[in-house]
Length: 412
Image 1: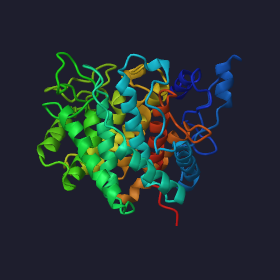
Image 2 (image 1 turned 135 degrees about the vertical axis):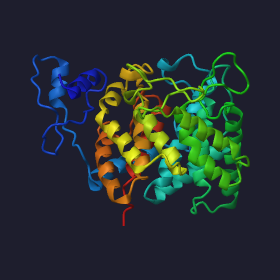
Image 3 (image 1 turned 90 degrees about the vertical axis):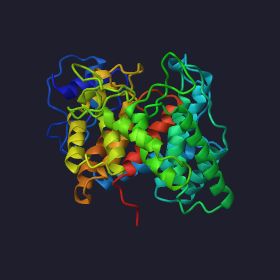
Image 4 (image 1 turned 120 degrees about the horizontal axis):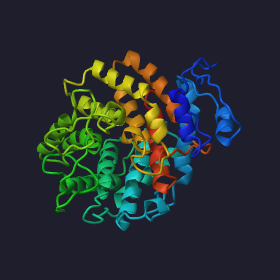
């Protein structure tokens, strides 16, 4: 049985309207493999009914999908400028601290703010962006939820990314708003300063013995914020460059000889990615992209174009493992411990790292990436890769829009 069919069968019981990109010779250059399907059950019918997904997709073909994602963000924004809810809205996430649901709302809100900021400007999108920035600046800061549950770090991570980007947006001219952005950016940094582990980096849980300063960091949490730490230094929000140096060293320690990046960033010696380990290439498809992007953006000479290309080739070669894990409700349920929520995170940072390559070759990479984003989009323009909760829909739609915006020139 082909790997594509394996992915289709795995996904069919959960989302029978979502196709997986093919590898055959369909009319768009990427139809599904030709297989003999026996039987008349629901899975067989779903396989036959799935539309073909092309191997590549041009800017013009993808622009409508991007517009639908942005329209979903604009139309679902609440009057106060926020999205979603701060309360538990799905029983599959029972067990976290009450504060964590609010922290997830803030972090997903930050992603939506980033997506609207990058959008082709319309009066509606600009107004929604400004409302989103104001809510992000005015809402209370999340607090630590419990001894082990430090998910409020997510609000600090993407909050700092969003505010540091908003701080340099020339369209935001209101002096009071600019002052609020500056204040909130510094507050997000103070949150991160208290959750930075001693060896450098950040994560969202802690291990015993529990302490005021957590002891566990991950490569991907650390990587996603590193370029924003450099921006925050330039804005005067961070005075000590040692924070970025420690984060960089922690991420560099995660790099393995096989090209993967370890999940954990707080161990002195990286753990090998043998067998079906999360630290293998197939379990590191997203971490490779975000780590290459973070280090490459900051000028690490080891992140060469060839190294970026190799990471992207692995991403597409082993993409089926992200496909299979997407929408699985149990974290790390997939092969190589892939989790559903790896999917859109991985695609966004793949889109980012593509833009570190020479300009002449970027568009071809983006054309390969777009079908994997659009194939999961719902008819209303929203996207999710894990659960149907409000924060996942907000974050997923924002990540999809951010990914499609890369490599897509503005309308003339």
